Image 1 (cartoon, rainbow, N blue to C red):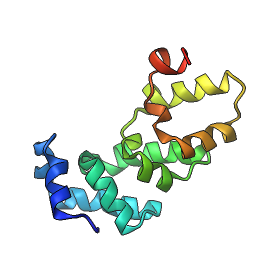
Image 2: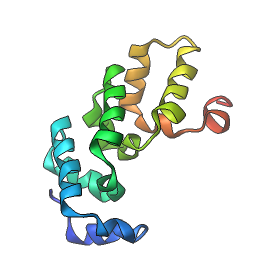
Image 3: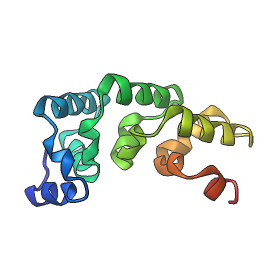
Image 4: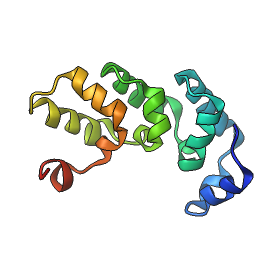
Length: 134
């Protein structure tokens, strides 16, 4: 996947338990990322920046979030490449709340999809601590 071996070691320092993920689990996540349209190099960068992603269940975690993004017209491959943590965010606890926040302020679903594509970490911002005050 084009990942420098030194980077792999550094990426597991904060969460060494992620290094014990079985190869088949990681393979299903890699195959899913390929299905989304990410290149091998992009997947390598995603795995380096967010190694915990290999511990997620594709059908229970990754696919529902991906489908939600697609419903907004978002290019999921771009979002995941730029901010891989976005697939970890809760649909009910993060994504829908931020959508509602912008929708109530007059943004269309297309506008929100464009914002997410350009700045995917928007969903990780706190409504009360960041978005509302700004």
